[in-house]
Image (cartoon, rainbow, N blue to C red; front, side):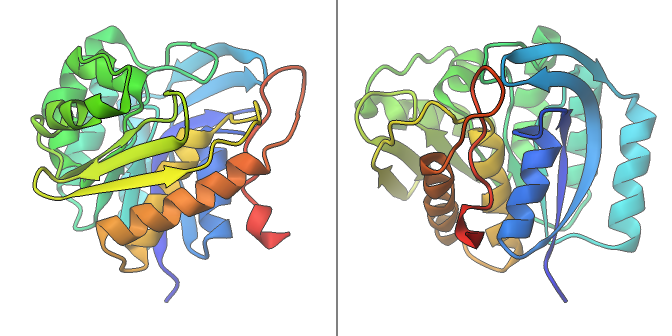
Length: 260
């Protein structure tokens, strides 16, 4: 049977990030994508014009509908918006026998807030402990831990700060640093440094969602965490290289670049 991956995230009406990016990534990587919508956003290449979280019972019903009938080989989380949704999704994932990739989305590519400040404690105390892999970028590391990373040498410090909250593995994304795009994957005992050339392309909307979904897709195929992250890094690097203009602002990465 084709591997099945469930994304629990917000909808991006512009199609570059969120649920839409997740499902495109899953299709490109040969798995069956399913979705639990946590929030609706009015969003385009210029930013987020509005966001409306869905009721907890609506999110729970979607999750149970998919997992209880179809089943999942991996779960990925994105925008969860509120403390109530974070806690509900953490409980659902904790009771599901499948690896979970947690992308602790705090702000959009344009700097628009996607997570209430009141939800940060729930992310730390409830969501990160059920994560197989957590994938924060440097802004999210600061938001969750207070650690500010300005150089590659600080990535292990950032990783240790996130691991203290309980995920099995953490992938610290160093894409905001100068030079090559370098990420650090670690479980606290082994380290994997992943490097890729930086492409001169401003159209990178959806990068984080795409990477987390790619990791979940590869885990669903039975790959180990280091293998899954390495494969996902290669996929998202190609997607960034092929990112294209859309609208008047920042365009999306190209999820279908391998298909062309």
